Amino acid sequence: MLAITNILRAAPITFNTALAVGKGEYVLREQLVVNQSGQDPSALDRDRSETALVTALGYGLSSKWAVFAALPYRYIDLDLEINEQPVGQHSSGIGDLSLFARYTAYQWDAAAQTMRIAPFVGIKAPTGEYKAHDNLGRLPPPAQLGTGSWDPFTGVVLTYQTLQYQFDSQLSYRINNKAEGFEAGDIARLDGSLQYRLYPRILSGGTPGFLYGVLEMNLIHQDKNEVGGVEDDNSGGTRLFVTPGIQYVTRRWILETAIQLPVKQNLNGQALENDYILRAGFRINF
Image 1: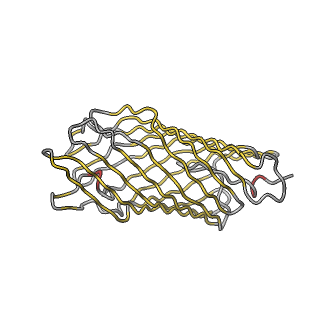
Image 2: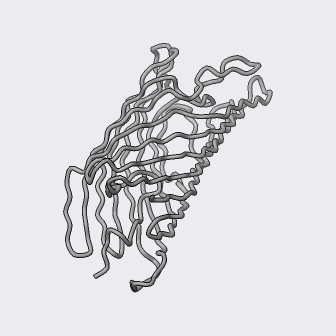
Image 3: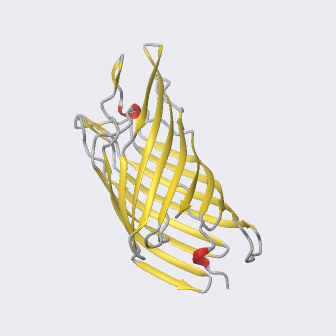
């Protein structure tokens, strides 16, 4: 019988999986993320685009424990109008570092199928510049590379895998703290992902790789930001994304791409809407 643990390695594209990282093994992930927002209900005609290259590295401490680090390199472009004059604000460089640990709390294995439940806990460290200025003064928070705050997060992820498909679901929460008089709203997320094997239809021992169709859902709620201790009524809200994607999976590496499309955005006041988030990248196990 084909062994599920050493052949199929499909995984969510927009969040993590509960499947273990082998003891003493590493997982390296590089992902290019293009985040475009331009649906501005205000008179400022804001348009924000960000391109980030996110490097993530995971290490298996044991059969149950794994630790991860993720660091983005960000390029942010914020265009708007002030007094009917176009203004462009830009920044580029290292963003905030995220560190977290994941523990496999529940494991169930049967013939050609497996399930894992894994809680995780971590911290976002203020490694990105958050006091950048241009000729107009200090850049607004949406144009800064970092937040300047230490922000803890936690959650739990469930994975169910068979030879034909894999399902993952994640519930997470991040507490955003205050720095330099600004506090971003806390973020709660519910994510789901289905990866279905499209090719080959019938498994055989000589198949070098597998093509998966991916469909994900991302429900994200963010509380209002606070500036100087006062809530910003034009920030925060709830977004629902539907995310189609595709993966090519081998024993040791994955190529993947997906696009997050907003199907519902219930935002506060004149908060800026997302147009799309495009993701493309690869993973390597070693």
